[in-house]
Amino acid sequence: MSPLHVVILAAGQGSRMKSSLPKVLHSLAGRPMLHHVIGTARQLGAEKIHTVIGHGGDKVREVTTESLVNWVVQEQQLGTGHAVAQALPHLPDDAHVLILYGDVPLTRADTLNAMVESLDDSTLGLLTVTLDNPQGYGRIVRDADGKVTSIVEQKDASADQLAIREVNTGILAVAAKHLKTWLPALSNANAQGEYYLTDIIAMAVEHNLKISVSQPEDPFEVQGVNNRLQLAELERWFQKREAERLMTEGATLADPARIDVRGELTIGNDILIDVNVVFEGKVSLGSNVSVGPGCVIRDAVIADGVHIHAHSVIEGAVIGNNAQIGPFARIRPGTKLAANTKVGNFVETKKTVVGEGSKINHLSYVGDASLGRNVNVGAGTITCNYDGVNKFRTVIGDGVFVGSNTSLVAPVLIGAGVTVGAGSTITRNVEDNELAVARARQRNIEGWERPKKTD
Image 1 (cartoon, helix red, strand yellow):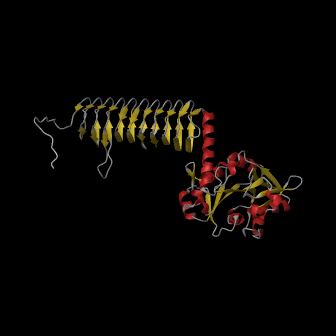
Image 2: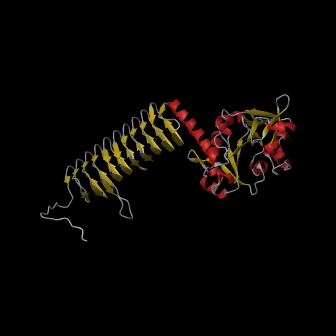
Image 3: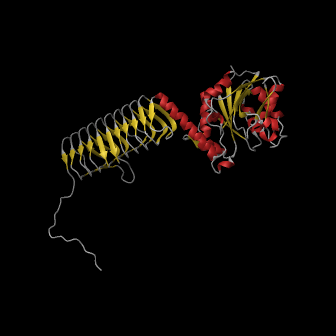
């Protein structure tokens, strides 16, 4: 079986994006477009991915850490045929080669598999699409028997050819040995003065190769991005597809048009997601989870029965069964909430482990801390974890009650069953079952008069 090598063309400047960022690095669904294409190539089982770069190539390499990628530099942008030719020295003679584009990010692996799996040395696989408005695309020319004979670019097409609605996507697959014969023979005698990859279709016909044509389920799969309007259009199509997937897998979406998935989201059954929720990175939702409006959840594992109330932010956290979060809570990386915990409104946690049944109800910051079971943290409590140079931990035992407006100055250990009086600043360890009160004695001054304004 021939190894599969993928060539991704990603050297274009993308001047219509009006940006200093290379076009293929513009983000779609939270990832650079190029990374979507590389991910698809990986799904296909590619032995090697050759990415042709030019404009902004150093930046492209910097943000792309994929180990399978072999970087190929196209010093001058002289057309798609010239770009693929730069990769020829890296392609084994026995390889089958699939050519993709860094600015065509959403082609499904299933669509490409259908083309690649039927490939042999006597076949060229070609992906086409039929459009109501084919403006700007190369036309697929067929003979009287319906066999593909060539592709004609729009600027070189006759009036009859311009009427053709079946167009070239640019995506094709063929044996490497044919590319090594055909690409050096390309001519730039055309309206653009470029070496067109599409010219190899006529060469394949001349060499009696079968042109095997397939089409995607949806034209959006092969839509390229040349400007920000097209990028936004693809983003909405991607999000629509994700919303449909979630609903078929067991989620109720308050409005399928107002959810954004920017990464990998897996769900259980009976999920309820309100409007304007954003999922980023890798997120897992258990069954019977509800997410209120305006929440952002990033790289988190959410267990069964969790309720996340409006406008909460969860990042890099693990949330246990039946936990309650928010509204307006911020759960920062390193937080682990056990079952039946509650982190309420305007509470922020960071690198904090909260034991089963414990509550931090409102208006508190608890960072670099460990809380035991059934702890109750009053409003306005903070763990003072930073001395300006180093971070220190606060450890709170089971069954502790922390009064409101308390400062716990780390490093400090609060034993099991302790009660901390409201308004205290705790700087020393407290033993089990003690009452800790650390605040100034109250003074009531008789006859005191408020200052008055002077003229």
